[in-house]
Length: 275
Length: 263
Image (cartoon, each protein chain N blue to C red):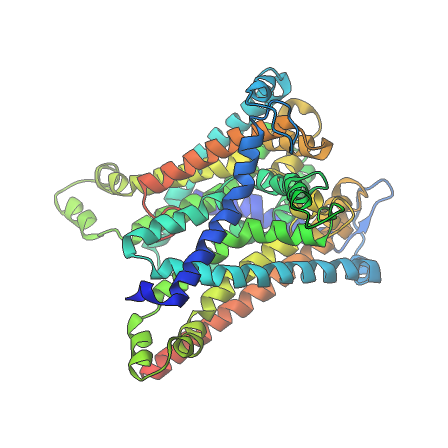
């Protein structure tokens, strides 16, 4: 399978190079000095960088939470539609997700800027006197992230609702549970693995995002992705940039493993209940 | 009746609002691209002048050509490798290591893959250009092609392969006459998606293109236009790019139902 070779050569090997670079020193002119050191990781823990990590995690966390809250009822609505329409509804959700990320993000600059449609609109109706500063801040970045990743969360939640055995829901209702109770006690817990899958995906893609904070944060707001970019292209401190990348990968893997463990546990419980 | 429940109609209103949220920003760009005056908030009549201006820009044209070269070549390579990979994976016992390898390109942050590839090319002293973008784009394209083809293979009745062998067909003949026609919609859908992804990809191309404008791709050009400021040309550019992606994604779903929605 030559594909495995390609992925090894152009993904695994490059990531290993970054892994090794993270333990070396930066050269005087921006190159790499091959002296072993842990300073890059120590430096990543300094308060200015730690703040950027925590800010990134907070922004990614908020974006994820909002995306899940908006996506769940939307996915649920799709799953209640007649069978033949569900695919079409889902396709309409996914269509923007497959289009140009830069442009989808740029659209929010047009909408949110001081002279933009939202400000002009609100001003015209008299809701606001002064244009709101809703671009180039955290609000704009979170909006952009939710906008870009919402389709995927809807898809993930929809597929977990789909996999649900309808008889379980019916049994709950036959036993006299009102719909809200069936939802809270049966549907929601059983679809949590799907929610977690979608949430982990959005969180991971958000925390390491570069374009959204770069365009909608207006350079004032830095996230880990921008920090890595700067280390490689402006500060020319590749070892430090490499250590930041490795920390990002470690966070990502920890989350993916947790989510996989959660799915496995749910599976075991299901089998245990049957057995 | 389910639809008579008030809760259900609230859910449906919510779903409609989600569609408005998803499509309104794109529609705004499309409408503004036709605005004669070019101002985002004052409508001064319909005009195609921003499209004409794009077509007259040699930088845009050369970026579009570069993008096409990268997308076509990386799609062809990724479609062949991704399809072979899907066939190989489905024939073996489940391997979580292989699954992780195929899942990684979809979830690894773009910026990390970008700097990793830049590190590799720098270490090997490879001159950067369109070829290094192509090598890089194949990485994530393989993963997507393989995923779409694998879904197709799940519904595949393997007894037909045995039947073909029993009737005396060689392995290659069986592949060409039986396997390939059956998985072809998946292969085509995967290729269309790979092409779309490649046409739209920015960060990895940006890091692996090298200095100089000879290997600038369209997304790189769009990025510098956006950084420069909001201009009516971007709206026109955005409209064209959106139409291209939407068409490709639509075709992909058409040839292989479920390519996009994952069923």
